[in-house]
Image (cartoon, rainbow, N blue to C red; front, top):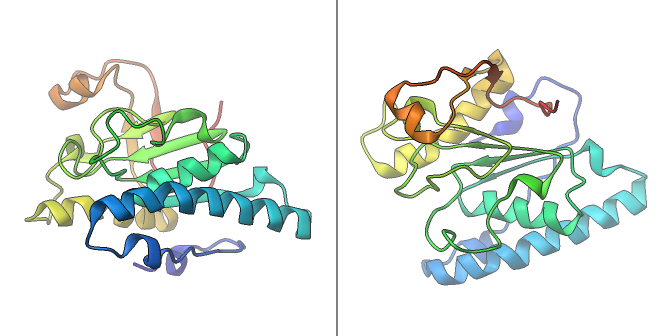
Length: 197
């Protein structure tokens, strides 16, 4: 998926190829490398800031599955000062009680898009704002768990070209599943800029 192909703004794009760490068929190895790679990414961003004068407030990190937790680790290692983290379908296995999972305070604004919640992806809230399109499972056009799990980055790409989807505020995940979302407030899912305030 070419997220860069959908960006119509003047931005610098850095892609982290952590295939050497995540490409193992052994999930435990990839899981362990998630933390190590997140710490390395934080060191790279610190170096980049020192070398260029960039500020942590200028970054928007995006990660899918294990990569969602990886960007959380990076943000945490940078003191939660990054502007915006988007976790795309954060992985569930190994992270239910793990302190290294994606957290709201990993950046100034954190957002998670859940598309296979409770199966391959994390079920409960992880960010300042969590979006559950179609209740977070069984995505339109998908006939497998893997397709559902991958759908989050298509939603992010669409948010970059069209403004995305409008979410309705719910008190809980259970409320979202039952359509009992009576709280005031709507918010656009995805996009390039954090939705703080």
